[in-house]
Length: 318
Ligand code: XMP
Image (cartoon, rainbow, N blue to C red; front, top):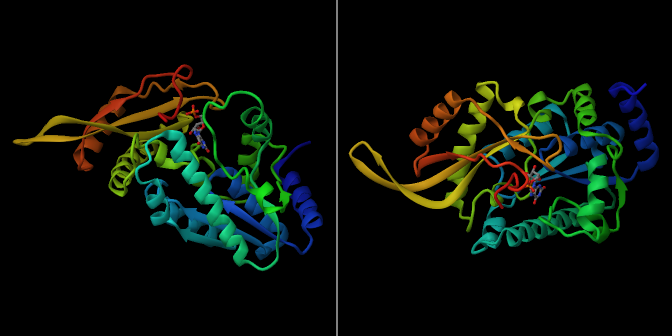
């Protein structure tokens, strides 16, 4: 009988056997998979697991600090947080094509990870939060079929670095990963998170990325996400986020005419992200959140709701 408790006992024993006294490096993202995988590996080998968590400047508001704190204080992981915001903004400057943005972010991430690995004496293995659907999907993403959007997660690291792979979640589905995480005592707040793309807010700022635009979108996204949680809607949708459109429109504030950005809100229901329906969020909530954003986020004077399903639209706008 598969239970999270049995899985943990067996997996920790197997990891001890596989790793021995070698050192493992791992990229942490704040996502469910990498967090659960790291916690299991840490249980097996303690501080011989070296976690690297990079602030790429396009995370959600406050996320880097919050997640790093959870890693250290709640999960006691040996993790190094790296503020690479300026490096990412520098290389993203002038880039407007979605795939170019993905490439810059993917490459810079690998560079930073390799630099960090080189700083730790005697790293021999690489930990990854690969789960079963990733194993299947990587066949179609990297195989002969046409790539619709390239997904740059941490794939590509092992080949370049010649490290042995440690992938404790390789045969699990997402719901099983969450159950294992719960059993390991990982906070619900982390386990129940919506999926968040590797290139983060960079693919939710249409067109060129600037630090100012990131701040604007972070604020709008924060109000939206917090609103969903407060109205008990967060868990009813599969993924949600705000998108900053490269459109300014006229509005009015008191006696003043404004000319500011538009934000699109997206929320979808889905099983696996391959197909998705736009979520029928209550009108009352949409009314509330629109006011909340426009009244509190200076620089945004219009909010629209995306009512497109996938296919033919995609979940992200880029
Ligand atoms: P789309 O937009 O293709 O998104 O319908 C499907 C799911 O994949 C996520 N996504 C990405 N995740 N790197 C990632 O790690 C990416 O480049 C990327 N692009 C899209 C998206 O957030 C959704 O969950």
